[in-house]
Length: 366
Image (tube, rainbow, N blue to C red):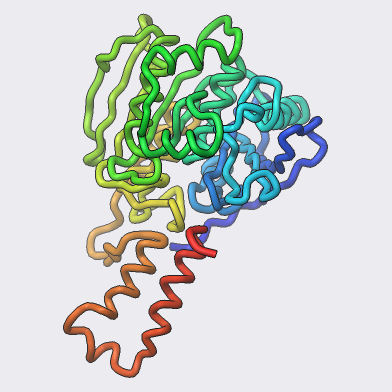
């Protein structure tokens, strides 16, 4: 698949505010920037940065095509050695403090500098970035029209690294009342709450899928919806549950991606995919980028069809897993019985190097 190239690249913003969380900030503006342009805030996961997450998820590619802006907060190693947003540190997840305030300042700066529509601001993120997206939705609910949490965690349920790992493993889960209390005390709120979209792999061993259910329980109370969804459907083999408010508007959805591990669900074998294979960018036959954008009114069904539609008949495509799994799978075939004739003369140390390089690329090995 060719790497997409946009006519404009990410630009760094430096003087956007007091920045108490000492984060970096990158911005993508479409070539044609119309008045009252929507804004999507995108938060990368651990071991990633703004550019690699954008390359994998293709948010700026979609933004160029559909005419919205994308803001990429970026963690620095001085704040977190693994480049995770600090979703578990009390000083970084309170309204008007730490990393949360830094991100709020970035958004405010872009609204003022580029004429962004303040009524169409959305936020999404993966893993620690998903958890931090939930922090922003909880602490500044008046700022966002909607949020999408991919492989993330509920707000305000961990204080420190030890509790963070417990929550990721699904251990000592907070009660529904504790989840809801954390949310309702995060900010004084008047008016409608942002819509919530949750995406999680059923085989995620990094952040257990119970966290998706806890996010749904956390937000159900403020949206005044029941435990029973109004719609249950299967999309490309994956489960989607939808809750509507009393006016019939979709206010929450939970997408469980069958068989997927920890990462962003994408469709690389489509005619016009939004996304590129890489660590935590996973082939799932469904485009979370396109579908999240559609739920926010930033894309349409035609965009989703292009992002997920299978390629033309007769064109061969590899069924190998994507990203790091692909590299490891290829390396491990050398050790399979019956392949000795193909590997004769091969230096076994080369196989180990391939695996180690893949692990380093994923941030799983130094």
